[in-house]
Image (cartoon, rainbow, N blue to C red; front, side, top):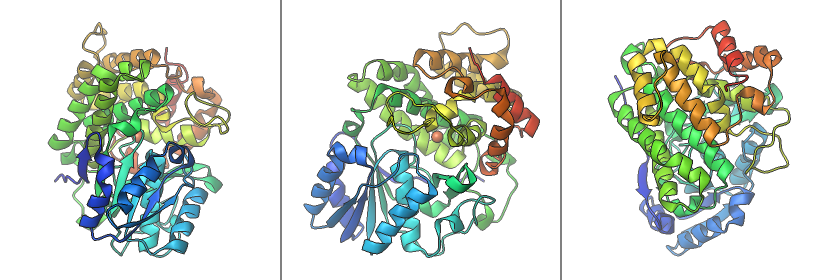
Length: 418
Ligand SMILES: [Fe+2]
């Protein structure tokens, strides 16, 4: 059995000027616009709030979202919303961090308890929300995360030094408003990292364990991700074609509006696919790669904090992860490589076609050369593996189950990729 769920979607220039109308359709009278300080400084959240007020809906702005949110930053947002509520709806204006924070706010203003009660087991309590959530309108300002389409929210649990998440069908936004105008100011480094996130969403969902191989469980026990399936495949293939045509151009020339619009569409398509099918080993590895960062400061991101952006963290082990999963679904891996890099001389070993296509693209758009490029060495592999095996929800979608030694081998081979 496979399932398909998605937010309602509005795409196009000017889409974010109509959110007030959309909110009246949900009967909302009082809404909280959630954003981060950098996005607030662009003026878009205020413009959106004014547009909402123009439809007679009371709108307030919370601009305290933390990029790469933590349990502490999410609690701060939740406390603000609980203290100023009740709210009829939420509007998230920002990247994945903001949309994920808004999901947590929506969950914890509609249901009681603490954030950690709902974080996936074994990190948190794995509790399911009992009360319905309010409509969440997601307005992405960075291409990539797909958070506007998914049922998950990701956070760093600071005391445990681990990235984990909350995952439930009720978290999915009611409406995604994709207005490419909001993405035009995205710095080149952010476009590159988020482009690799989009790519991995598409490639991982396309190569995920097929839905037919999942153990049949009662619906209330099923995870939100259902594995590769014909509908998600369609979205992934289209996303990969758009990336082939436009990722390099969008990174090189930020004024290439057509390439930017392609990237916004690719992000949306990939999100609609992986939001149902799921992702696997590269995303599982990305959690500890981002979570255990010591001193890496990427171009295009706030300079004050060490971080490995999500999309970059995902991509760094992708070539070697796909080499490991190749045997489980050779035709699917080859198809991804053909869609991404039809011009590439095909390596003698079929298993190296997709890794070669990824290495070339990553080098072209300025992604660091493996996990060594963001400060890790072989001596970090054991502690990274420890973080990856905590991501059982993601590893369960892998087409071939990696042992701890397999994960260590993937990470060791990813210290330097080229
Ligand atoms: Fe991702």
